[in-house]
Length: 188
Length: 349
Image 1 (cartoon, each protein chain N blue to C red):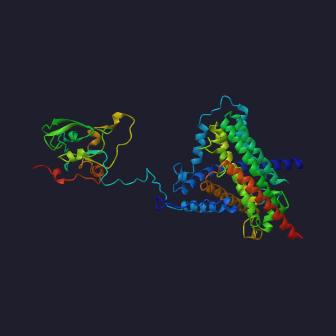
Image 2 (cartoon, rainbow over the protein chains, first blue to last red):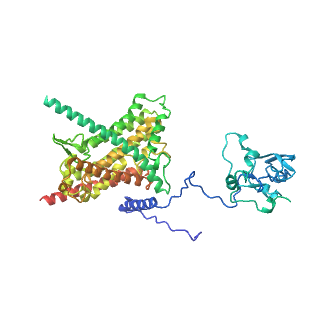
Image 3 (cartoon, helix red, strand yellow):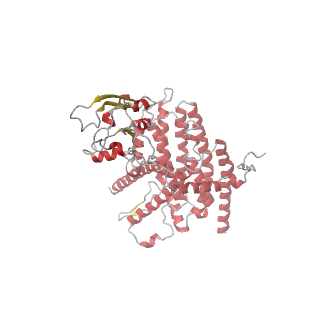
């Protein structure tokens, strides 16, 4: 009974003397190995050569600023509510007179922390954010010796200032820019 | 004190030659380990080691350094003297074999001829064989002194393998000696320079000799003595640090020396193929240098084939190994010997 169309009959006839010396088959095998010496290598030489991420890759979070370098986040807490892993904590504070260049709206996040060990990089925070203040970049969290090192605060998350450090800003922005640019426009 | 001066010069010449041959053996063995890993990588579509220095050329130094700094463990129930003697014997035997190989054409100077050979004795090739036989003791003693049943079993396996494959090897050699009519290595080379390489007249003999050389060096497909994965690492299971390094290193030196022996016996030694180098009128030292380079090229090719075979063929089972040695190779070698003798007699009459 044939179970599959790919079944091949096995030749079980005893080997002849020449076959039992294995010579011809060894030479054939050596032909295969020498051919592979000149084939393309499968290795990616990691630190010098990196594999590109998929365009939908979700990596480390970035806290965004607008074009004038003001923080977008208003500490509304929607990201923390949306977060299934409960990785986000924040503390709100009120903008004082003279801080208009630092924060875009009257309320801002005095403390904003994401625990990268809890985070599952689902991107729900990015979807929940009404101000395009948080989005996921294309890098991943580097290794660390201490668990504390994986709790990222504003210092690690905030994007570089677009006017003071334009190059670092563009680099941090990456290919994955906030979806709607109109939010970044200053409110009249 | 003319005799004294000559003797002193003679001793100095030999000491320099011995030192450079030992240095060369170590150097080649070092880089054979790198070549092995590189070729293995290429044949498996990888790059091989390429981090230590450009193209990984410092990798052997890193490997050696690692072995030196490893903890040295001597099993408490072992015989410490024999435990030490095993790897030492393996290394000494591997190095001694290279004494009778002519490494290049003799250098002719104003004061005389300097042969690039430590000892050109009349029984040349027999010395190689007798010393290689002593190599079994290195394995046997090491395996027995470890006081571990796995080591002992592996050592017995290795010893029986080496003894079995010496037989067809010697039989293949006899056919060569029929033709050259001398055991002297230098005369075997000069015979081939005059009459063509032995491999042309003894292809079967070369094949048998090569297969046996693989078995004698414990190389795949005959590397049962040191099967890391399924046979519990073989006779050097209890060894660590540089004692293990000596065993592994001796294997590579054996590979190098057996390649040199095969090149000398079958591939014309330091003979440059297809040309009559005597008609070039080169300076003697330059000619010696070129002939040495030619021998090294042949040795490198044979070493590459050793490595190539290792990364192509899986290991034989023990019964297959014995079957091949006793029931295939010995009859073939005998047939080859008798055929060569008959043809030689027919040609001479």
